[in-house]
Length: 96
Image 1: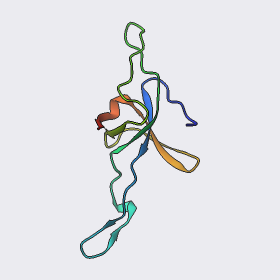
Image 2: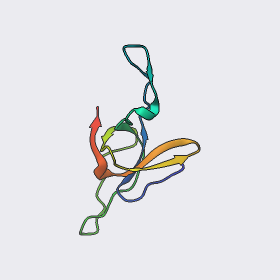
Image 3: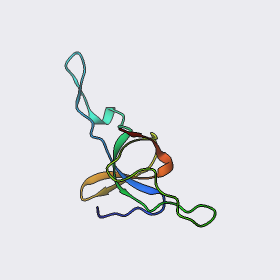
Image 4: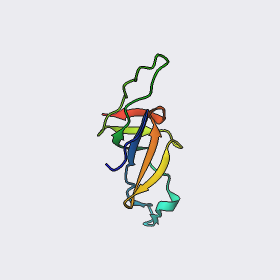
C-alpha cells in the first residue's frame, strides 16, 4: 500500500455494490444507492497514545472485514481506486 496511516487511523477499501435489479426488471443506478458501510482494512496506523504516553494497540488488523459508521472517514483516491481513511473510533464491528 502506498499510504501509511498515522496514529489510530486506518485505510479501508469499501465493499463493492452489486448491480441491483427491481422486480419489474429495471436496474437501479449506483448514484441512487447508498454506499455500503462495510469494507476490508488495507493499512493500519501504529495506534494512539494514552495519557501516560504509552501507545495503545489497535483493535483491527490488515485483512479484517469491518462495519463502519455511515458518515465516517475521508474519501481518497489513489491510482484510480477509492479508499476511506478513518479513525478507529469510526469502526463499529468486525465481521467474522
